[in-house]
Image 1: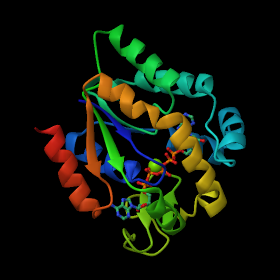
Image 2: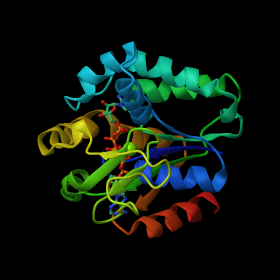
Image 3: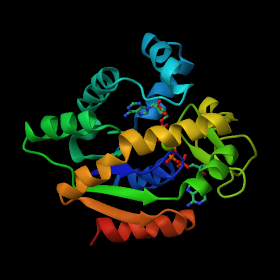
Length: 214
Ligand code: AP5
Ligand code: MG
């Protein structure tokens, strides 16, 4: 199964993608997590990506596409994947459609997690992220068992650099300008499905499972 998670920054794409990946035993591929791991390890890619990410801007398509196409070559992708944060622009979506169609493949579902902008800033300021395994928590809505420590890999949790309120507003603007058009793009491919992302994490997940198993 090949699934794309769509939605604004902070809509819960990563939270839900992790749960989908566990249930269906497919990899969770988050371009944001891959960039953050590169920044943490101070790689060339990380240095390039950081300059954009810290400002709330998108990393250029060329860099992102190179990275994701390499990732698709990994053997764990053979039974599908859940994409989180990719594609994020029309050119990225077109490149993905083209790469898949060359192997007579296609996306099964693009799940749009809908959350109004007003709720986003509150979610971001309380988010805590694991830079090691990509785990995502919220100090109130989805706390880790031990404060500041990842449940899965015991690494330290951090507040992301780009979760400051002023950067969040910029990311929301970039989302509306560059990423929201993908909703119509995937509607046109008849794979768009929508879920109400304002409900509790487990209810949102149940909604997604209903979609995937309909
Ligand atoms: P990325 O890491 O993808 O960030 P994003 O899209 O801004 O999304 P977030 O990870 O912030 O939010 P999310 O939807 O995953 O929400 P989460 O589950 O964490 O990208 C970061 C940057 O990398 C971009 O700005 C860009 O620069 C670059 N980048 C990445 N991909 C790129 C690409 N393809 N092209 C170009 N550049 C790219 O949830 C948020 C919070 O809410 C958490 O605290 C969570 O616990 C909580 N929460 C989740 N669900 C609920 C719920 N139902 N109720 C209450 N709280 C909830
Ligand atoms: Mg995320």
